[in-house]
Image (cartoon, rainbow, N blue to C red):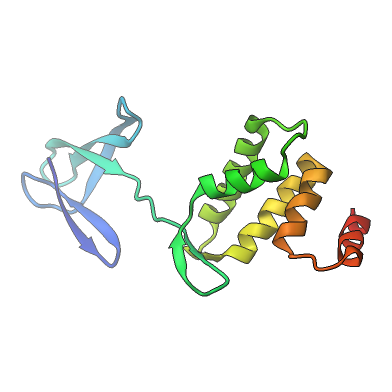
Length: 159
């Protein structure tokens, strides 16, 4: 057990015995479920040891849609769209899952927690272009809302 105070977004760990805010980490390892990190600490002031458990905070990605509404990022929506584009194509679900994980990692690494649906569409098209050109054109034709054959031909010529 430990005591923690939140100060400017940072948690300060206090020794449960003397209340000192300084401790050194002696041992650190993930828990059995790999959901938390167990840290053995030693208080710098009194020398007593105690354990803390740290959980990585998962901040959700918010998608700003074209109509300005907001919703939580849903990787299943991306998978459905990519599966539709890859229908009857030699593309495995594993390839799509990997692409979606890479897209999600790109979004998670960004400093902004809000992303436009346009940006997500661009990331999907980048991945589909590398996976299967036909799937890319199918996705682009729906995503970019082609209204003529010339727009369709123009996109194909970019390949």
